[in-house]
Length: 173
Length: 222
Image (cartoon, rainbow over all chains, first blue to last red; front, side, top):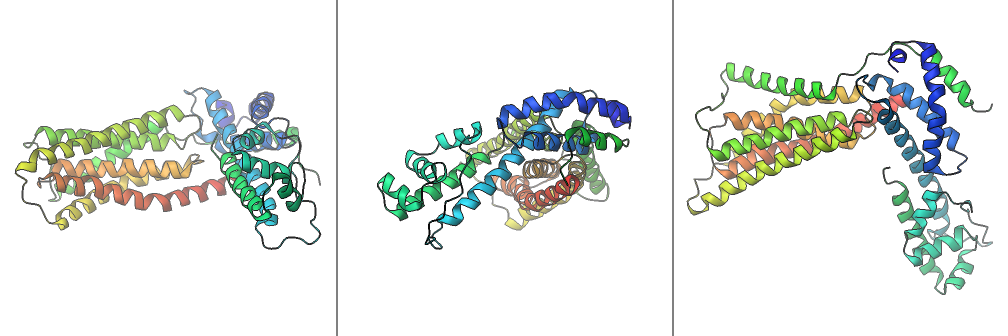
């Protein structure tokens, strides 16, 4: 790393190649089998490049690298959490219920560990609402019938569930 | 056009491997910031401003000074370390020292207030406390600028935390200088002019500084 800071391109390239497998494991443990894994690893490499002037030779390299990687993972989870609830809440904010009840946006059924954990932390009523609509793909009417509540009550539960999920996923790592 | 592979990304980054100038150690920057604060105070005293009151070393005064000094060092170290990846331990320890120092200063002031409740001194006008608070803020400016300059150059991925801790640390430098030289007595004056006043200024200044640090960080990451 010191050689890289001094501008040694060959050493820098060797360093980056050596840390990539380690980063894949580090990021993979936090994101699971996510298609975004390689993107996040590349984001970490970019961040390492931009932050390389902050590394001090008298300090260990591992904590420095892991802090950058954790930040990249957190940014990715925040961005993902911002996108999915936004797509979902458009349907349930009551602007209008589509006459044809189109299929709502679904979560990937293979939930990442983070999402599964966040979902499990919701109160049962909110979890049920989010699950029925966005994992099982039911319409609002069908989900309300299954849950035994009114459509407006189900919308409120789902909306609160999305907010709680977003807040949970945006928690810093 | 498909996105670059990781190998292509590595090749591009290695080709961009210009030499960089390392940031200094956070502890060294904190020492410089405190020295600048002390230097500003000394210059002000040399130009006719209040000088340190070496004769008035009552216990409460010393405890408050010690507490504020601890808060200054802890806040600055924690805030500066917050702008360097992998220094979470230093951030935690610095924040703890900041908290202990603040508790010591406030506790000593509260003790003096309670002890004087039987025969309270005549309350000074609030304008006197405001003058002390403004003087402390002015003396905190240089340390703050040094700290924020470092943070802007380093890696402020946590801009709110960095801005808040450095602002509190710098404000405490100013508060310590004022406390060492203020001739006014009374727990209310110490609390308002030497503690809460600089604290309020720090909390007012921290949000715009945090936004600025966040913009700089995003621009560097673009």
